[in-house]
Image 1 (cartoon, chains in turn brown, cyan):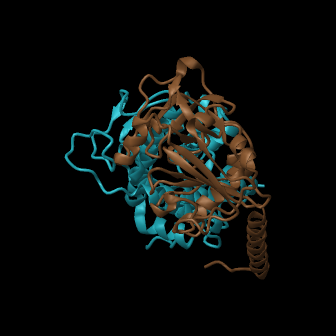
Image 2 (cartoon, chains in turn yellow, brown):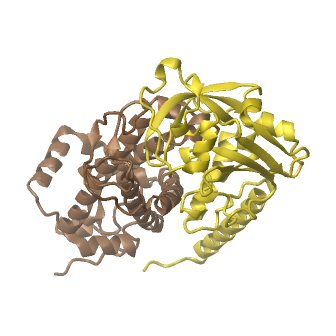
Image 3 (cartoon, helix red, strand yellow):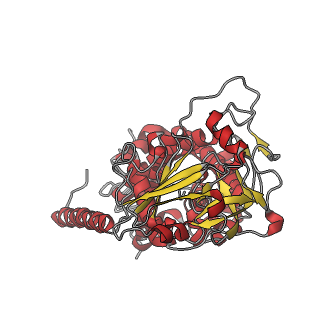
Length: 252
Length: 256
């Protein structure tokens, strides 16, 4: 065993101390700027916490890639969901006239919007890619109202940090931070490839978050809640995803 | 400034081992040893979780899009952990994709941090220049040919070869460190919708999202092949000696 010089020991000790305090400072700064993911504490969650913070800093407000009309997939894949049940079929039979998107929580003017009302809101279209965590992808044109417009309508209180969105399917719900909620490409989609959003693809309403994986793009949404903390929702991990073993932040 | 290969007084009768041995310093620097094993751990975690992730959709495509409604260029004919993929098997494997993805990306951070530490240190410290880049003579056709031949003949290396990588070793390590691992990181990041938003060239230069995924898989195969050959060569050349050298840094002189 070679000699360990005193100088080397001191240098290594200083380096370790500097790294430890550096990490502590970084963690404090991250917490202050809302860069700690709500599921950072799960098993192997430290990596996801690093990814969330790094991507928020590096990616900023960049736009997801948009494609040309000729690149729209001829064979989009509508991933199976659990059977939607009789209540959904009843709503569908009524052309979703009775569908409501309730928006509540920390909002100055909570509201419940009907589908026809939503269709009078400003429309944003995007030809973007959607990809599942399984690895498959397709490109389609989604049309809908920017989430930022809906938020503006209901007046988020200054302390709002997240938007929780829930679905007709009780066990599939998710949330995004304000960076994503206010992003121009985050829309409540009601149209796909020139027609109304088909039911297998999430119709009547689907949250579209093109900078994250498919499971953040919850289908059949009917309830948005504005909040400053995700702790009170489900198990407090941010969404149904970590409860099922998947990362809250699905940027990668 | 290049350090002398050994501090042993050399005569015409000095054994080849002693010509190169420098028993006062470790065979591999502490940082080389630490980063070597951290990389091995990270790679193991990445390969296992990566394999699990593939099982959720064991098909590969070229270009931007690909799903079960499209024809893959590669169908692995394995059972899947999802029933949405028609595999022909009558069952679905347990779904381990959740924790696999968490660990995959956590191990990726370990790999990147370790790799950066090793490469930056190695470049500034002279480690690559002294120990990994081939020297001027090593790349001559004669030297390359000779090394290749002795490998193909399965010639067992002598004890003096503990002290220096041969030229084929140097070239393969350089390819792994500076080509294959960076490509893994690039193709991996290219599959991130968030990263692509900031750096679309990362995926467009590769030819699309599904091409990035296919390349990520293919380069994994190359790295796994490297791993198998690497372990075999270590065992063939002298497992205990080299493991000891890569763990404690010590090399014991050969018995008389």
